[in-house]
Image (cartoon, rainbow over all chains, first blue to last red; front, side):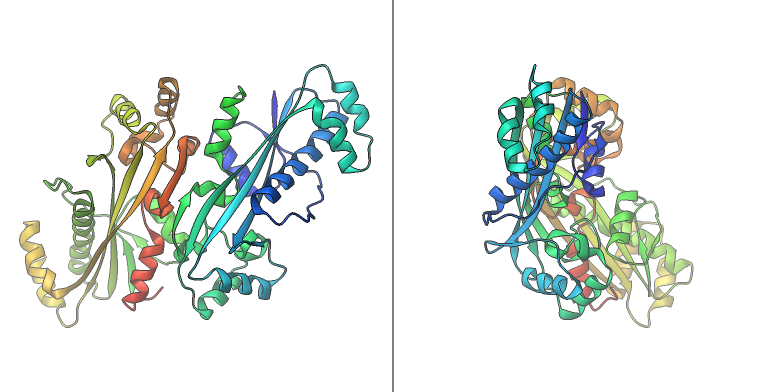
Length: 218
Length: 218
C-alpha cells in the first residue's frame, strides 16, 4: 500500500519522515473557502477536502491500493480563527493579538483509502466537476477517517520592537497565526499543553495511533 | 561580549542558533557525579559546574568579557532520576518504565559572567585544583544566575516490539531517559505540558527572558 501525504508543507513532510513512514508528497488543489466558524470542524473539513482531491487524482491515474493523509492547521484566539497573514502588517497585527496570551492550535487529519471492489465506480465518479457531488458519490465507497488534535500555546509578552524584528525575518508570512513554533519565535513561547508536532502541522503521535488502530502499516 | 555554550550537545547548539544567538561551543570536563536526589536541585548544580568549568578555562586563556551558558537535563519518573542508559538493555528498561505514563523533564541552566575589576584574582584562583575550592573563591567575583524549567511528557503505551524497534534505531542510547522527543519517538508521545525545547535540552523561551531581564544582549 502506497502512502501519499496530501500537503506541500515541508514541515509536515519532515514530521512524517521522522516517525519512520515511507510516503510520497502529492498535492492537489482543494477549495479552502468555508463558512465553518468552529475551528475543529473547519480543520476536519479542510483536511478531508485535501485528502479527497488527491484521492480523486490517484484513482484517475489508475491507482487502487493507497492511503492518503490530508491535514489542515488553524490558530484560534478567543474563538476567532487566524489563518495565514496577508502581508507583513497583517502578520504584525496577529502577533500583537497573540502576545501575552494563550491560544489554541487545531490540526485536522483525514485518512482515505479505497474500499474493496469499487475502483471502476470510483473512476467514473472522478469525472464529476463539482466537489460536493463527487464527495457524495464516492464517500460510501471509500474508507474515510477524520480526527483533530488541539494544543494550547502560551506566548510571552512581545514588545512592538520584537514583533517588528520577527516579522522582518519573513518567517511569519506563510504560517497560520503568523508564527512558526519551531523557529526564531521559540524565544517568545513560554509553554504548550498538548502535542507539539500538532502546532508544527501534523500530530504524528495521534496519527500513528490511529493508523495502528485501523490496522494500517506503520 | 562573547557568548559560549558550555555543552557539546548538537541539539542545544541547534536550539540556541534557532533563536538567533551568536555563540561558540566550548566544552570543559565537569564532574557529573552528585549525591543530590532532587531533580531540579541536581540539574541546577550540574549546569553550574559545567558553566564554571568553561569559565575557568576562559579566564585562564585571558578572556574577560564573556557569558557562559551551561545546561543539564534529566528525566524524572515517580521521583526517580533516569540519566543516560548504560546499554541497549538499560534503554529498554527505561522505556518500559516510561510507557503509558507521564514523567517530568528538568533542565537546569546557569549563566556566568565575570564581575568588574576582578580578572586578576579570578585568574589566580584558576590554579586551584579542587573544584569546590575554586567555586568558593570565585563565586563572589562572578555574576552567576541559575534556574530550571520543568516539562511533563506523556507517553502512550509501547509494546515490547515497539520498544525493541526503537532501541534498535540507536536513538535512545545517548539520551537521558532513553528517548529523543524530536525523533522517531514522537510517534509514542501523546502530549506535553510546558516548554517543548526544555525536553530537547534547552528552554530557550525562559533563557531568552532571563537574558533580557539581566540586560544581556539578545
